[in-house]
Image (cartoon, rainbow, N blue to C red; front, side, top):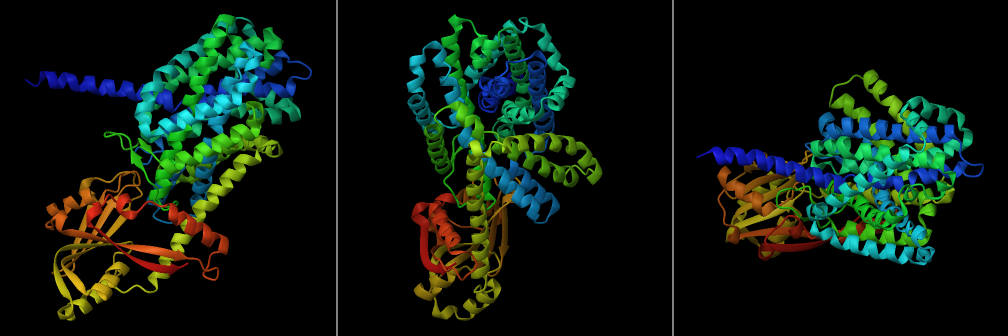
Length: 631
């Protein structure tokens, strides 16, 4: 009787793994999978004046292959995918894990987390614009008349891409996954058919040639390093998207398909340029025979749309983490999967990214110009992640300071060299990602600091809860008792909520049951139902309730409160009123923050979703009482 279930369960697990494997190829590796379109072409430009020579090409390809090996394989796939916070990745998830393990606030790690996340969002704007324009520019090889249509078609594609985000990562991955598999196979085929053009290119597999290139290329070699780093764009998105698909599918996809295809394609491009130097103009598309050129341009365009998906989903995950950790106001977050809580859609982030991408497309005009702006955000984010990994090795895995430094110093040195090389492009457009990152950091720091100051200011007028309850119970004869349960939301459990004070002051009523509710965000991504509820009885009519959610959980208060019945607290949801305080903020430049940060904080507070919607409270059971607060 049980045999069918026993056999179907492994089958179900295998099917689920294959779905995640295919999805990870389509979403996680979309970005890094389109780097061959432009990385080698851009790296060759400094040498194009006097032609290319065999040692330069072999050394350059060797540098690209070993950059992929060291940074993506060793750092991200083998190491950082294991540095997860209960299955979630990304700089903010890593920051939360470090704060949880050390039990203290670390200013250096805090700002590192803000910088890393800000740089990643900047990357999420540049990647879609650069990737799609690079692919469409391949049409110039089919017909030069297409040149005038690259920008409008790029913009149209972006409109379509950002419009479908509300369908969810799972739906997008099902469509994108098979296409990306074909793309990687096509890249591997293009490289394979040309490696034989110049067998000497296989010497690039020897890392000695990469070292020779770095030591002999001189100043041009430093400039080239900025382009070489384009080969690993998308690696940070790989870590940020960990929660969407899981470590095993992402790792398996890298080793069985993605890495081999990338290596073969770069080797093929190198062999092609050595045998046909004129192919420097566009070595990727010239890998393919004339009959395959148009299909490859179409496939490349589809692949670059998919590439954009990797950073977009990573930005959604990062935004949710930032909201729950208190770095951003409560944005609307829509869950797009009933089984995978990592698959989300954040409308505000989607709109900001869309506007940023459209502006970049028309401001730079072509992929060559935009490529100069690329790299700084990626390398900066990677350096930040490596710095935070040092603390991770010490705090979480128990390595000594010397051992952690010995492991990460070579990696940090390599990434720092790449960062310095990219910083040389500041005046050519590299200032764009830096400006974006600074703006995002200012927003997150303003929200964090403003919220802290607001809490400190309101705390000065707080009344201890137990003192207030004793006072109310002594004068209960002056209050009208009404049936049902009243739930008062507050951020400080042992202080009297302002909304409760206002309710008694203005309405002179007290419910039969009164619950002081505090919602706490854990530094773990997910919290089990067993740890969700903490109920403390204060008196016959008052109780304190704390609900704990992970920073990747949906904070559904109504659903969580049903768990209170198991703890012995009886109430009927249709006889329960939820009281919320509605604050109107008024700026005061003498209160701590500069006037412009006051205005920014007030504007950000206006972007936040209504607390009743954020906490999933029943709309017809919510009572709001307003107050004005000067910040």
